[in-house]
Image (cartoon, rainbow, N blue to C red; front, side):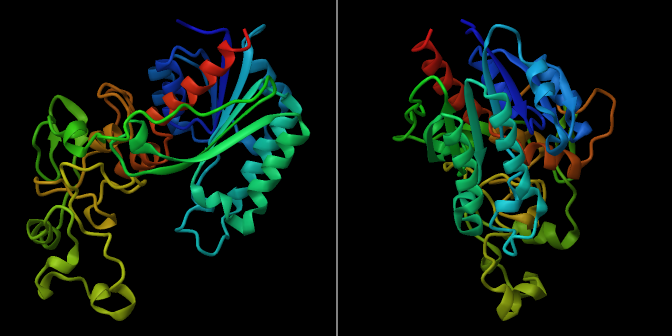
Length: 346
């Protein structure tokens, strides 16, 4: 049953968070993102308008005009996580300011409920000052606030991914739904075990997104010598890359590995389609994950469309679209939490 609410999704990307709201019967009014390439995926799958705008220059009145009239207003946002990622050790990505921009919009618009999702390292970024500034904006605007580090397998995602989730409400105290899958996690096998077998470089004729990247002759030998859960350390020395034979590279064991069938997958990044980019080798087929497999591990339904029919498929573009998305199951958790909260204040 739909609820008397209206969701605007900032930094919406391909629509993972919005789709979670929709699957929980929460009406989505619009998604906002600067990346035009996400428009088709967002609008086709979520039946909501995609607004191409830079959140840094977005005016409060523009957001207010997007909400449905006479509905509870929910403003959701997952600012780009790259500035706060462990891969940005120098803390020099200027997009960290987008979280402050999000906070300023909240302060002006004063939606009934706010949700924010990001990487856990945000809590420590610049000694926690960026996160604390966001919290202080919410407190001064009279929001009740809760946040937690969510381990996504606890909520039904077959992926080892931890995220910071914050909920805030002007109506009263709000809480995050409790985990439902703590005893038995969904696994790689559960998620992608029934997909058609394909080779490196091959495309499934029935699904153009089930497309695996090509492997060089050397990488094909490497993956044939890789075991699930292992790494390049298992190979004969003639297969080990020069960089990993040097002292500076011996600590990077989390690349050139196969996934394990009966565990959740590693965290899906924007480069999950490359065998050398992490433990993204298929558990038994001699190739990296296909684009469709990465999307499924991010919680997207099998029929979620990312590219308009007949358009070319580019690994880098779709890898970013899929890897940067809020996992759909996490979106559902946020939506369920907010829906339960709103029902208490009907």
